[in-house]
Image (cartoon, rainbow, N blue to C red; front, top):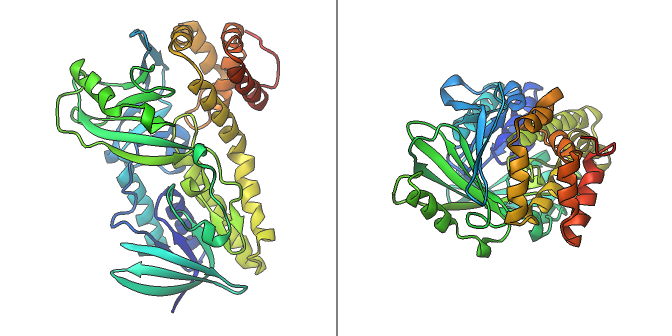
Length: 409
């Protein structure tokens, strides 16, 4: 049986980040992933500027800057939302995450790919893992494990950490397409496209783009019909496109630590409920996990009493963002097309946009500030408050989570 100080299950952004930081501190670390290529996952690949400063992408994997977004309202009107500088970058997500794995290995972490953890046993002194690797079960032992497996996994129950309810997840759909004359991000709203949510078209390179959407109820959404609509409109070129789906959590699991165990990234539910993006929060959680584990080795204490400090760290950093984003998504899902048309017309006003963007009002990675400013707009708040009783309840929770003073403008 091979021994490591820490075994990380999953080679995504959170797992690779933790592996690099642990290896840099001399912690003997193994990363196990079922994929042949780390980072090979469905994702649109948009990262905020703050994330890009934390882990700069190589120039050759950056497709472009997000300076402008064109929003299509349910009634067919188009509105441009723009700023003088980029708030996000469009990147090759797979190569970005591969870079993280490469840097972790340079730092000294070991990787076991094409391998899947099938069983976890916790004892008072160590963790024992059973790993299916090349049709053979191998045993590994460690002092600590990090679960970084992403959305779909059955390992949390094995360590006594239950997953969230099914309603706390969204279905995401994406397909690579060919486009005509699309130079900036397009967002499509309204029931004719995606009921209760929105779809996107993100240009990448050489007339290629990613068309996708996130939604709660797959039965009520005709994603192929939405794709056909854009083909018939001449925006997307006709083609034989394969649509792929995956799950996105929109709420953290109830508890992200246990004896000798930490949970990070999508596995912990660290994605932005508004957009479904999670790369930056995954990176941050990987860093917090590594910091906590280094402290645990120093103290010789791998109990949940000590490891709780990890949860306190991530909650202090972005728990409020997850909460406000969650209620913002619920509120958006309650809007009908008529209300969306009215609100988008307000957002299209240049002075309205300038107010939202003032004083660092918008960040791709931190949405609570722009949510707060939006709710404090008298007309917007009045429109939202006039909705039905269910929406009003959600609005009250959202308002309480982000607004600290009265409606002001």
